[in-house]
Image (cartoon, rainbow, N blue to C red; front, side, top):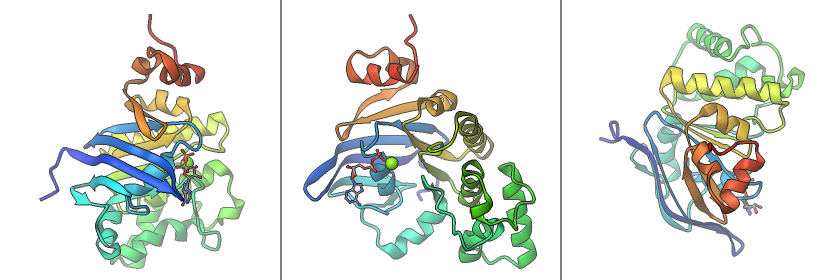
Length: 252
Ligand SMILES: Nc1ncnc2c1ncn2[C@@H]1O[C@H](COP(=O)(O)OP(=O)(O)O)[C@@H](O)[C@H]1O
Ligand SMILES: [Mg+2]
């Protein structure tokens, strides 16, 4: 039923406040199947809060959230489990299990959700690690990894169930520019290679430039702009200022 919908993510009029302090004040967003959408916004603008609404980690005070045709705002926890297999969330801090090896981290969702024998799991984990440039690292532990490597492991883990939608929260945060660029290239490859719909939340305009999709700028609890980065740079006022401050120039 929901399989062929062209709109994969549909957010309408979402409001969310914490302790009476509004963070989202009527957010609307549509992401189409196969699209890579970048959500930009300053620190504390509500980017992570918005992303958490898309897999039911947070519920809106008001408004609609539909992902892959499912009413995420209203589904019970049990009903969210199958949706979360199809919608992967790559957390800002990588959120690896420090007591598990790299291989076990990547295998985690496979063990939880798929009935595979050990040989099949091993093969799948090996292929996933290879796809993020970490072939042969199964036995290392997270503590031994650089920030960039941890992020790669998080990406491999996020792809384990072959998700239709991948949500990335600040994928380059805390990484040096070169490592950040390598991660961004990987994200682009994941989007192009798998045809997964990608929603990338970031304050890093280099990410938006490289991914080259539509950008949505979150400001004062709503999307102040939706379009290409070049169009954003041409805007007067805070939208243009934000984008130009990140080194994106208007065409003229
Ligand atoms: N679980 C929570 N409880 C209370 N306040 C929260 C919670 N999550 C986020 N906030 C607040 O919402 C605002 C937006 O946070 P966030 O979405 O994390 O910003 P960012 O755009 O940097 O990702 C911040 O003021 C933050 O303190
Ligand atoms: Mg955040």
